[in-house]
Length: 125
Image 1 (spheres, rainbow, N blue to C red):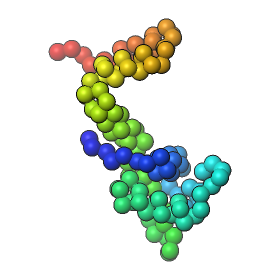
Image 2 (image 1 turned 120 degrees about the vertical axis):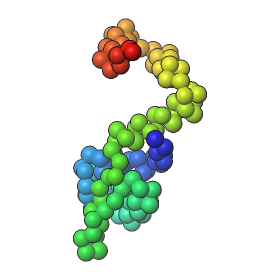
Image 3 (image 1 turned 180 degrees about the vertical axis):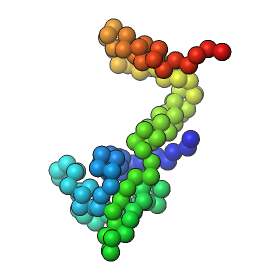
């Protein structure tokens, strides 16, 4: 699945929208940390997210209530597939090996990862 990449600001706005599920620009602004951007800035970025097909809206007079068209999990899946393909030649093993080495995992963390892998293991044919 090919997913367009979000900029840092777009991702911040999407995270708010994923958390609140739907909202007007003021609702989104309310959830942003200080210093808050201008209303028009958020409005412009929301229009960009609509054009990128990450977000849609319902009209309420001149106001738009925005909602996500893609889930956080769908975005992460596409993003991580891109990382795997771009930096690790599509090899999940290479990607996991890289992070295992760079993160200095404890024995407990490794055990937890092995448990997750075993829980998600496909049966062999």
